[in-house]
Image: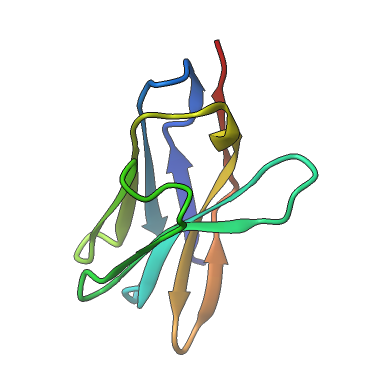
Amino acid sequence: QVQLVESGGGLVQPGGSLRLSCAASGSIFTFNVMGWYRQAPGKQRELVARVTTDGSTNYADSVKGRFTAFRDNGKNTVALQMNSLKPEDTAVYYCHGYHLSYGNYWGQGTQVTVSS
């Protein structure tokens, strides 16, 4: 059974940095797309960043220039480096993987809180 396991969330002050990591366990395939979504209280889940196997990336406008997504295809991992964090970045962040044949997979979520 494939699982996505996240780590690295926590509490950080505005302007600070955090790095989230996600690893796929039990996987016998490489995800076509891996990335991160987030959901703030009372809001819908939204895309933060995603990376394809060839390295193409997409970012939400709100995080461009501040967040960077990295992936290692061989290890089926994806990371999210978050800099210049703002209070509005506070949310539960979910790792996501998509495969053309096997569909969507989600991590359990990790809380990121940006507050002074």
